[in-house]
Image 1 (cartoon, rainbow over the protein chains, first blue to last red):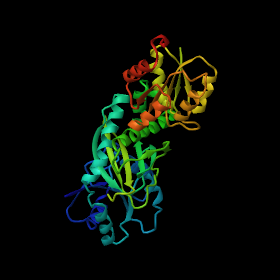
Image 2 (cartoon, rainbow over the protein chains, first blue to last red):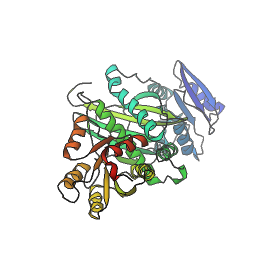
Image 3 (cartoon, chains in turn yellow, cyan):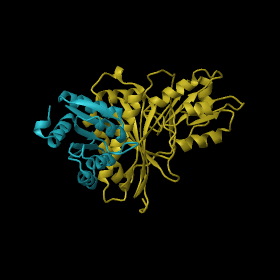
Amino acid sequence: MKKILGIDFSPKAEIALLKMMVKDAYIQYEKFHDDLDIRDNDMIILWMEDRHEQIDQKICKLRYACKFQNIPIILMHEQNRDIASQPFIIAGATEVLSFADSAAACRNIINGYLIPGREPLPEEKEYLDPFIRNTRHILKTMAGIDAEFKKVYFSNTIRIFGDVSGIMGLSGISEGTLAVTFYWDLAKTIIAKMMSTEEDLIDAELIHDGVSEIINMISGTTKKDFVGKPYHFEITLPSVIVGPGHQIGYFQNTTAAVLIFEVDGQSFALHVCIKPKTAAV
Amino acid sequence: MKLIVADDSRLVRGIVDKIVTALGFEALHAANGKETLDILENGGISLVLLDWNMPVLNGMDVIKKMRSDDRFKNIPVLMVSTESEEDRIQQVLTAGAQGYLPKPFTPGQLTEAIGRVLPDNSRP
């Protein structure tokens, strides 16, 4: 049974939504508040009344509460006229649907987003496990932090809903991209612990620098584990991207594994997009 | 006693600075290989802690320039880098570094590595 969380729905909108519901889905309704725990849901559907005020902030907060999981956030409204969906998509919504559209079309779209992600194949585990092990080792060694690996999913989207990403291009026997993405607060906590100093003393430049160094260390230590294997790669100088909802380009026809870690209830993500040139994996 | 902390990461320079200052060194910071060579020109350096991948001039090029210059060829170099494959380490040692410490490292590991490359009479 799929769990869907409907947020801010009026009784009338609840009835309209039922017509669009797929089989094997259970909807629970709640009013929006800042402490919603939405991680166990398969989908969030947010109802938008006529007024749009603060809807993008709500979407941002919901996306943050997803803790890097690929939970679809559908924004639903009942207006006939077209609404520019871009601001909502930028804020973190996956799709914007209207009750004015056909119920069958909406049902198909909702159903599509409820298709479950797949588990890693054995050959994918072979290259993901070293990244998990080394990421935990680096944070433990440099910051005394215990990072818990929570889950992995595969994504072919280039949207990343964090605040800051460190990115490393890979070349050589394998090609691809590695990216580590943090929300600002956790990045600041980690960098402060790495420097054995107070968080108040950590400025934006140090966060950029630290996130860059973390992806540098993850890449460098993991490449050693791949010596003699088709996943071996060479690294370059890392780059840093800052801004909510930023985008990272991957190679065409590749899928990124998104590894989610948790530190004291806060999450960060490592994106691993790696493709051996010679072997078909 | 002065040493150079050469790393393009201000974060890493800050981490290393705290450790070596506690050991009694005065740390001079360089953000790339060229800055490292500029500081060496001023003299009085006992040890260089050198990152490999840096902009402008990388760590390997710095080692090669130091070893071909009579003024700097005897100054110990400890390479501190994420490049930790065996052939890379051999490459660095062959080029003239006295030691190699892979990142990530603990304060204890850095202290031990400095102890291994620096003669007893050159320590603070």
